Length: 328
Length: 143
Ligand code: SF4
Ligand code: SF4
Ligand code: SF4
Image (cartoon, rainbow over all chains, first blue to last red; front, side, top):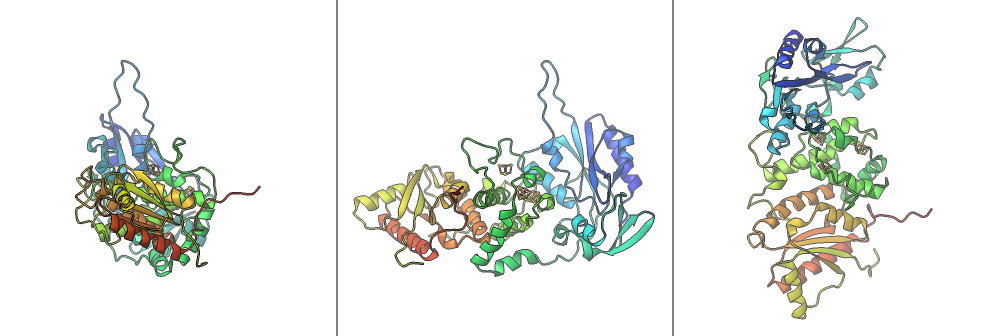
């Protein structure tokens, strides 16, 4: 993989300098260990810090809708400059899905596509190669990852620490972009979704038991919602008090209702970037819920979110011949 | 399950077809199980999945959503949306371990008093089989 950092920084500096661009969102090295932080770049100095490495797991598309919309001062002009955004394959699907839902307009963003050979699962990495204070670098090296730390290079087999979402990724190349950095990567053989299959093979009580244990851990921090590029409702049901759609108390009953509601709201919208699961402090495998629903949507309704900007939103449309074998 | 367990079943019926169908069953003196608690909504497409969640949390052992036959919706297409969304919900609930016998959906028109009876019988029977819903029912906490 020849992702050329020089080229990336040069392009970023050029884009950030454009009159029509407010800022560019990319990745930069974090303060310690395997951390990578989002970078909001306005000039060439900022662009010089940008990186794109196997540690860039975060989906930056969430900053498109997370940015605070300040009121326009009286007599002032609204700032309608664009936001430039660096995206991997999965992130680009979030952008497409936002376009479908009219969460953003196409002329509000400059999309810089980064073909992605797969990122690492930082938790898994830290488990096998304990994190130190010193910021580490990482690179793609053919079928391996290269960990560079304290002047030392360690080769790590790709399959050892590849993130789960990447094992199942069907779109490593950005599906939407204005500028593409580097060459497209070749798609790889997909792993079986063992996590979901294993659950499907259990009987209903077995699944109830499994999820009871998981949902019981939820602390209702709503990180999963906040990080999600597609959870951007101004008036989220979880914040509503009147009517109270989801009770705020933290107990198994409410946690289950909340988790089902969250997963359901993402049905036909989730683009499987895995961010919700990554940030969950209770390590709840939210990805299994998302992927199960995504597969149902794909198999039964022949729909895939975040690939076609002209598609109709899944839950706000229907086909006359949608399956109805479950109806009495 | 004890043989004489009587389940609570909450039914969300659309105003224009299923509610009228249930009404017809009543005026035609059709006998059907009395375990069902009917809540009238304007359209099956109005049934938020959280209604279903809430019913289960608050003590229902089964939930039924019923609307007009496809093509008959008073609002033209509300039941098509309901079919898609609640179909997904059924899959999701099954995946998190809610017995699929607890959630049903049906099309019952205003003239189908007898179909209504069958639907209720099936729903109640299934809920009975599935037994009292303990899953994520809201529990009163004793301090
Ligand atoms: S991030 Fe995890 S713990 Fe926090 S609300 Fe979501 S599921 Fe619960
Ligand atoms: S639900 Fe999770 S995996 Fe899906 S788009 Fe949101 S953050 Fe990504
Ligand atoms: S949880 Fe539902 S209501 Fe809340 S932001 Fe996400 S999609 Fe919107």
